[in-house]
Amino acid sequence: MDKLPPSIFNDVIGPVMRGPSSSHVAAAARIGSLVRQALSGRVKKVLVEFDVNGSLAESYDGHGSDFGFASGILGLDLTDPSVQDACVIAGAKGVDIQFCISDYGAVHPNHYRIEAWAEDGTCHRWDAISVGGGMVKMEGFNRFDISIEGGYFELLLTTGVTGCALQDLARTVSRIIGDYEGIVSVSRFEQGLINVKTMSPLSANVLEDLGALCSVLDIVCLKPILPTPSRARCEVPFITSTQLLQWVQQGEWEMWELAAMYESKRGNMSEDEVLARMGQLVDIMQNCITEGLTGTEYADRILGPQAHRIDQAMKEGYQVPGDALNCAIKYITAIMEVKSAMGVIVAAPTAGACACLPGTVLGVARTTGRSRDDIIKGMLAAGLVGVFIAQGATFAAEVAGCQVECGAGSGMAAAALTQMFHGTVEQCVDAAAMALQSVTGLVCDPVANRVEVPCLGKNIMGGVNAIASANMALAGYDKVIPLDETIGAMYDIGLKLPLELRCTWGGLGKTKTSMDIRKRLS
Image (cartoon, rainbow, N blue to C red; front, side, top):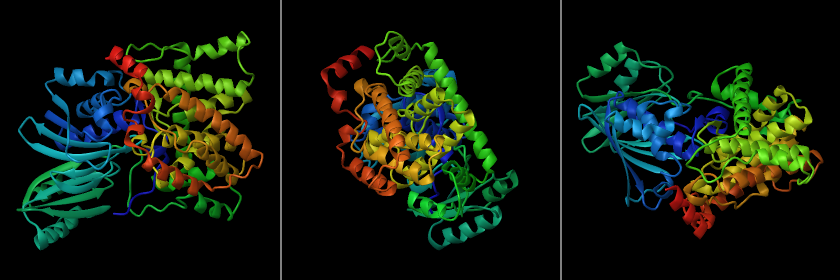
């Protein structure tokens, strides 16, 4: 099947979650959820392996992959307060989850090799990757090649036939199911696998008919794990900023309107539903700021509460004047502190970069009198820029450095601000391009294996950069390099960064002070 276009609510703004990293906690939870579903929730033991040469080998415990995966195995929602204790809870429930580091030659830095056993002895082998922003891809099931990203209901039917007999069986399966979005069959040695994707669950009668087929050995059914479902033959009006600007020539549009239209086509929902869903996310972002400004406490972190210091310093005259800028810094800090205290945040586009976009947009809105409606429209504009980044690059720092996390958040925030101040579609796109051009090569080098330092500063830097870029675009500055080419260059640069500068163990992360802090927290 063709790759589906990104969704604003799947790939860009979201998930709503607790934890330091969406690539680690949210993605691990989604992988764990699929593993749990495949064993009908009766998981007894799981072995999770990370390749020694990947990113997860160094960061999985400090960034929450362990308790994220355990949450998925237990079926905990990512907003549940007990997510951080999921490993302990699993042990208390008699579910043995083990993590180990081995050298098995994984290609992707965020690769999971998993063996899971049910209470009845059934064992499944999975290969999965975290692709950024909480998105995942299941690439292997019992050594069969598969492609499951979590937007469909999935049927995995294992059979004892291969070759032409497998193709005949696949046709029979398709007739029994009737309405499906895609069907793929693969062979391995003496067995075959048929993977069917549907938009609704299969009925008990259909499953009974499939189970009655003489060559069927096993049937696994999976539910979607993404907020916006997938559907085949999904046609969107544009998938790059170049196509967007060509579309704009057909009439008078605002950036937010095009974003709402895009997501309504991608998610098969009305534009009013898109606006309502974005409004719900904005409310969560605002609640996060309120919580952060009241002060947060959490033992396992580097930084204590600091957001209140901005107001204090302003009162004492120790701040460079600039209400919007200082409010953005304060709000960004508040959100990062909630994240670090395991509070509920919106990954936008990731958890490590969760504060740049909302903190900047809400801070500027607060000081300039913009309405909730203005904020929602700005967030939609940001989401559409995020779609272009997801399509042309990635949101995984493990793949391309912090330029695709805090950097991407900065580009998205620049477009949001430009929309909020009534910029044209072209100006929104140019603002994003200029913001991204200023962060190319930004590395990911977390201190003490925690997503706090220099993450806070990079979120704030992204916000400042977004404000400047929006102002430049609104003033008519020449962006020189178009957004699509900028995204391509950023991705190319990211792929060339050494692994140790891509969310592993390098830069600031391997300084003496960082190592001392890590020992103290451990």
